Length: 455
Image (cartoon, rainbow, N blue to C red; front, side, top):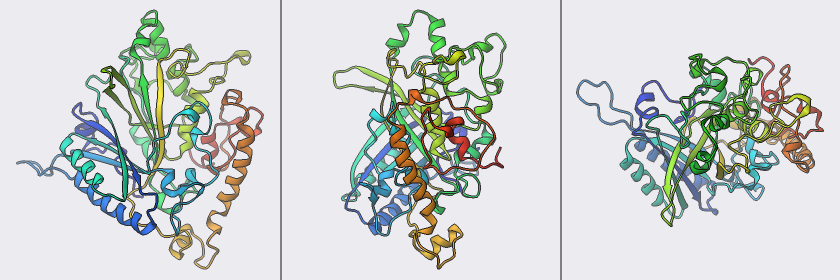
C-alpha cells in the first residue's frame, strides 16, 4: 500500500530533516477560487504536484555520495471545504469526501472548547519541513502566481528545537508512537479498520492542526518548580514524576497509566496508556516565535498530528484533555481539565485550528463516485447503483446529525469517562457523539472504529 508522503520520517532523512535544528517548518494554507470547477481543480493540482516535486528534489550528490542530500518534505492536506461548500458538493461530478468530512459527520471542533476556535480559512494545506528556505520561498512565490485559481495564501512558521525543549523549558517529544507502530495508527487502511473511506484515501492520513499560544510569564509565575512540574507531569529533563530517580527512558516507560500524578497533569490527561493505547496520534508539531505590531514577542506551538481517523485526535483532545471526567476519580469526583488548557490558569490559548486529509500522492484526478472505475474499486458491480456505495454512510451520517444535535445540548463536561472493553465491530465515522446518558459511551470512539481482529 502506498503511503502519503511528508508525514513519517524516513530512514535516510530522519537526521537531516526531522532531528536537525537547522530545519524550519512552514504551514502554507491556500484558498482557491470559489468558482473553480472540477477540471480547473484537477489542472491546478497537477501543476502543484510538479511544484512539490521541485521543492523536495534532492541536491546534486557530492563526491563520494550515492545520492544528494534531502532538503525538504511536504505533506499535502485537503480541507473539508475542498470537497463541499454550504453543505453541497463543491464540484460536478463530485469528488467523494473522506469519511470524516462526509455530510452530517461532526468534526472534532463541533463542541467546546474547539467550537470557539477559528478555523484556518483554506482549501489546501501544505506542511513543509525544510533546511533550504530559498526553495520554500520559491514554492510559495510560484503558488502566488497561480491566480485566479489561488485567491489567498497564508503562512505560519515553526522551527526545530535546538535543545529539544518547548517554550516552557521542558523537554518535548520524549514519547511518541513507536516507529514500528506508526503505519498502523497514521495511515488509512481500507482493508482493515477504515472500511468507509473512499478508494483514493487508502494509504492517506488525517492532519489535525492547532496554533497554540503559550504564556511563559504565566507559567513562570507558578509558585515553584514542583508546581510547574505538576502541570506537565514531568520534570524539565522529561522524567515522569512517578519515575524520578529510576532512570527510566521515556520511550520505555511502563505501559500502565501513570500512578500518583495530578489528574490534571498534561501527561496524565493526554497519554493515559494501558488499555487506552489503541488511541494514539503521531505528533509532528514545531514551536514558533513571532513579534506583534507593538513589538512584543509571542511564542507557542504549531501543533500538528497525523492519524488514520480523526476519532483518534477527537478522543485524545475532547474526551481526555478537555473532559473534566477523565481520568475517572474515586467517588465520581471531577478530574478537571488538562492544566495546560484550563482557562483559569491562562497558560495557553488555541488561536486557530484546522483539519485536512492527505492521500498517498499529490491528487490530480479522481474517478467520479458514479463511475464504473470507482464502483469497481469499492468492490461493487459496475452496473450497480451509483449511490449504493455511500448509502450506508449517508444513513449513519443522518442518524449522527440528529443524535448529535440532541447530545450537544449538554456540554462535554457531562460526558461519561471513556473506557475500553472488548472490541466491537467497526463504527462509521458518522456514528453518534454521545453524552453521559448514551449507552454507547461505554468505550471511547476510536475503539468502536477498530476491527474486532485488530490488536
